[in-house]
View 1 (cartoon, helix red, strand yellow):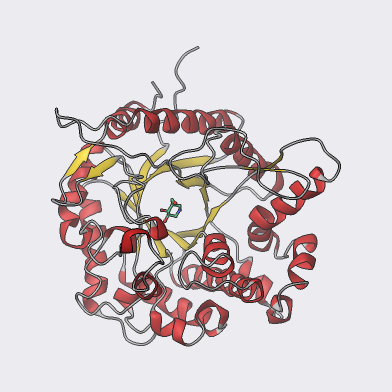
View 2 (cartoon, protein in one colour):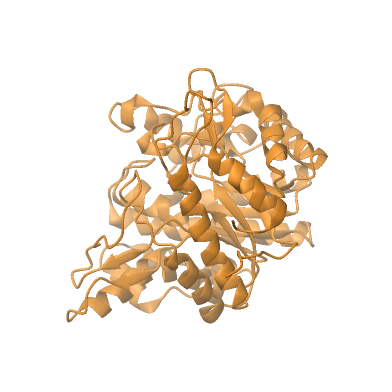
Length: 439
Ligand code: IFM
């Protein structure tokens, strides 16, 4: 069988986020974010790591742009640090923060790389957290103000609103392993509603002020499958699908929370009483693209417990199952209105070492990427409108509560010297980008 060939206009990209790569957390007026606060608490992050220095992208962006150009990327997805633009999360912007992103967008333009900017990748200004963070409805209104500032300041066509609202809900507010470190289902789903409201408000601002540009959310979706055929497993799978997928897709695409999931939430959270008239219309502001982030699927038993059916990656939550990406893309086409789909994150951590010859051999990552791109290609062949793919991540970086150990980059970063080295996966991806062919 011939190697899969992607369409010539397929967008090949790589993704990062501000807190994970920028460093310079106390420079040029940047205000503190919830992640600065969270990392400062001993025990919250492995080895006491923080994003203070990260991989110094704030000072090395020109070098990193050249790395992207050397890979021939069509597009680069990055996030804007809200506390760089509005150190207190409200009021007049700090020009220095805006200028950093303007220079980045200009540098991409000079290299023929299209920017895709995420408004919020978890680094909420701490001042807003002090006022209740995402549990406070006002944060969604502040988000719309912030969005207006950056939309007007930056000449960027494609935008993503909120990165993985589910991770904020599940890790930030339910398990508490992410900032702001809350462990409370009641509060978690209130935060969820306001995150989605923020998405809708910002989308509306873009449509009103910049017709012709595009916007959508970046949703991490986990296909749910039965682990067995025991009585009750099918129900458990449906419940899992509600919490993992429909809870985010239905309000955005259909203007309604899924009834079964909302009923379950109502038993543990006052969230339904926070939904005001007009909110779901705002949340379902038509989107122009959907960011699909896929890492893993969930196989569950009748008790709703996850059962691992395939090998896992360095991080145990990542059960490697490329078929889930195919099923997810096909399901999105089947169940929801058609919008351009972009796989805005997909990747795998591996403990890569630089060999004596200077090469970084990350065979497992090449296999992972090839298998998942094969799944994307199969979905495309069935008419699913996938327009692009962004590997996570361009660079090794700060993996949140896991610190710097899990390396997701296709470009290795020596954390002592900050030297960037293309891993074998980057060299492989460069060929894929150049030829559109998976070899
Ligand atoms: O590093 C994260 C990213 O910030 C959001 N999506 C998942 C990645 C890997 O865990």
